[in-house]
Amino acid sequence: MAAGGGSPSIVEFFGGEDGYRCGYCRSDTGNLSHGMWAHSMTVQDYQDLIDRGWRRSGKYVYKPIMNQTCCPQYTIRCRALHFQASKSHKKVLKKMLKFISKGDVSKVASEEEPMDSHIEDVATCDFPHKNESQVSQSDLTPLAVDQAERVENEDKDSGETKEEGNVQKVESDSVQICADKGTPVPAEPSHSAKAVHAPPKPGKGADLSKPLCRKAKDIRKERKLQKLLQNQMGTAEGSQLQGDQAFLLQNSKSKTNQPKNIEDFVFVPLPDDARHKLEVRVVRSSPPSSQFKATFQESYQVYKRYQMVIHKDPPDKPSINQFTRFLCDSPLEAEHAPNGPECGYGSFHQQYWLDGKIIAVGVIDILPYCVSSVYLYYDPDFSFLSLGVYSALREIAFTRQLCVKAPDLCFYYMGFYIHSCPKMRYKGQYRPSDLLCPETYVWTPIEQCLPLLEHSKYSRFNQDGKAVDEGRLKELGRVRVLHKRTVMPYSIYKKRRKGPSDEASVQQYASLVGQTCSERMLLFRS
Image (cartoon, rainbow, N blue to C red):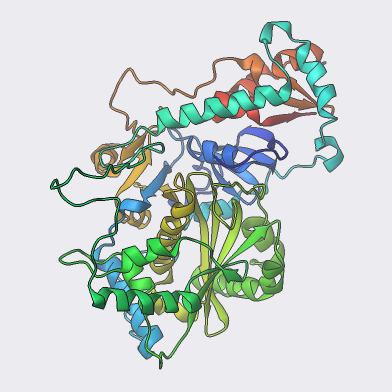
C-alpha cells in the first residue's frame, strides 16, 4: 500500500444528479450518476473507490447509478502480467516499428481500432463542473489534530482512540478488505503470494535459484538491448525510468515456440539508420512538475486539434480552462513509498515524442494496485499509427515495468466497459480482463460476464446469490466529518448540528463509498 502520512481526503457529496446527456446513446437525460467534489484525495482512497465503481474526471468523482442509467458502465481491469497481445494488437505494434525504422506509412483504415481513443468516456466532458465546489480553502483546513482528537473522544460509545491510531487501524482493515475482495481468479496470483524456490536435492533436477545456462547469441542480444534501453526507454520526469531492466530483458529474450509479448516489439533494437525516434516521457501533472509546465502549451495544442478534428468541437470549445480542469487538475496527492514505483503515485501525463515533438498524450493515474487510464489525445495527422491501441499497449507494458519495483501494482484499469454501446466493447479485447460486479464489488472474468450482458444491459456478475458487499456501511456513527474546521465522527456531528437532519444524505454517501473509505476520508459539512 502507498505511504500515507499526508493530509486526509476531503470530499463534498452532491448526491444523485438529475439526468444529463449521455455521450454513448445520445439520450438527453438518461445518464444518471452520484457525484462528489474531491478537494484532495489519497491514492489509497481513490484505489478503493474505483474498486467500488467510482471514476474521476478532473476533481469530480462520479459513480453511475447502474440499475437506472441508460448505458451501464462497468469498471474493467486487465491483468497486465498475464496479458497476451492479440493478432490485431501485434499488427499495430509492427506498424509502429516499421514506421520508426523505415518511415513506412500504411494509411489504411484501422480495423483493430473501433474508436479514435482507447479510453474514450466522452460523457465525462458534459458534467464534471456542473457541481464545482464553492467552499473556500480556509474552511477545508482542519484545526490542529489534538483538538480534533478531543472532539472525537467525546463519543464514549464509539470506542475510538486517538485519531492517528484510528487511521492506522482503518488502513490495516482496508488491506484485509482488499485481500478479500480481490480473491484471485484461476491463474491470478494473490497480492501476498511469493514464489519461493528451494534448492533441489542432488540429482533431482535444475536448481531454480540459479540462472539458466544461456546461448552466446542470447547474451549478445541482451547486451545490444541493454545499450538500446539506455537511449530509448521511457523517461520519468525527463530522466531515465529506474525500473528493473532485468524484467524487460527477460521478457525480450528469444523464446522457442512462445508467442512474442509487448516488450519484444517495444524494446527491439532499431537499425542505426532508423528514420524516426520515438520517446515516451512520464511527467507528473499534479502538482505540476517543471517538465509538465515546460510542455504545457505544446500539449494543449495537440489536445485542441484532437478535439476539433476527431470530436468536431468548435474552435472555442477546447479552451485552456477546459483542458486544465478536465485533464490536468487532479485531487490525488503525490505520494512516495519505499516499495513503490520510482516516479511515485499520483497523476501523470505520458507523453509520446516523435522526432522532438509531442504527437500523443496518455493521461494516467498511478495507484497502489494499478495504472488507471483516464484519457488519450493525439495529433490527428498521426491517426494512421492507431495511437489509441498503441498507447494502451504501452500503458500495459508500463504497468508490467512498475510491477518489478512495486509487486502489488499489477493491474491496468481501462475505465468503463459499456456493453450496450457496441463502439465501447473493444476494451474487452485486452485479455485476460475482469469486470466489477455492481452489487458485491467482486472482480469477475469477462468471459463469464458477456453472456449475462447479452441477456440484460444491467447485470449482477457474482452468481453466489447469498454474497453481499463485504465493504458495505455497517456503522454510520463512525463516518468522519469535517465541520467548522473540526474533524469528528458523524455521531458527534449529528448532536451538534442545527437545522434539518442530513442523515439520509450522509447515509447515501457512506453506502456508496463503503465503510473503510467513509472512516478514512473527511466528508465536508457546512
